[in-house]
Length: 496
Ligand SMILES: [Zn+2]
Image (cartoon, rainbow, N blue to C red; front, side, top):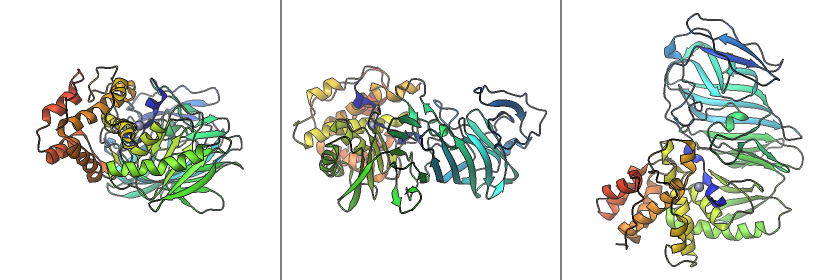
């Protein structure tokens, strides 16, 4: 597997349709510092206690939460079958506002996160994902509340329940010495991943962000995101969003609800160009020569090309941060993290995700191939655009034969979302559609597919509907074969 196949958008993970159900009334509380106030240990008599195993630096006590009406309890998990611990029920997040102070050696942080959300059920108990954080205090609308940390969850109990529709702000004061997070089956680490001279912080797979912040890592709960980051001298924090002037912190504000905002801290030098009136910023390591000139030349050309495919750029700004030494590239709204050494195909792939996978996402965790397939196919389209290939080349075809017979709509494990069906078969589907309905209808379909669903979600059914509208063809058998059948179909012989 070549490195380019590790370049992907994570954004389609974010934004979960929350499932409301009652969680267990019992959790194991983990405390690890004298700064942590003892949680309320009022017990109930209905549920047996559970325990968690913790590191030697922590102590574990088993306790039961105050008994409350189960109907007032938000789910501690989300809708993901692959990441059942990630995401939380009972509310919809509107805004994350982080203040992070990073230690001089980059290994620890003090954080305050204020999360503004709307209750989507009557709610007296709710949770956030939080892995091995030292939580000092939690307040809701300024009032301290009872809380416990338990495994991957931080669970709060209110004295008085919220009513469905209520907007509320939960503020968590915490410390963390976060470690990289690597889900089983994933070939690289995410989250708080330190490489000498740089640090990468990612909202990646569900679970990665919870290592450095309380968060609801739901697959479908986009939120506005504000980062206020204090870093050691000589370092710069760059993030998704627009930079806000501030004397003390690096501040970035997405100014709209987005999926999967991210940031990185590194010894970067920043420069900026303007493309079609949009600021394009480059955060690069000064010691690596030539990259700035190359990216400043390539990115405007690539964006011009991508606008012909997808329509106008969906955001008011874009930043690219070099993460030399990383094993992946990552596209988040308005911020791309990418190693300097990545080939140009990866750069155009990640830029394509600004439209396909960032501005348009999916409703289900099994639909990531829609965006990975399209971004992968865009690599070939860009080669055509530059005249390096006159058509979809034999080299592309030979390099995009999936090594799995997994149908695109069959996602059973984390491995499946990273395999060659997601990338190669996904790309081949788009090319097959192009051959099936012809260039004119195909490119009109792709642009309409993106523009009609901008800053919203879309699924394969939406692509089929638009392709049928524009081509006038019945494509039900085509999509059934390409999406659901074990055998990868033969490409249509010619266009038209
Ligand atoms: Zn991708």
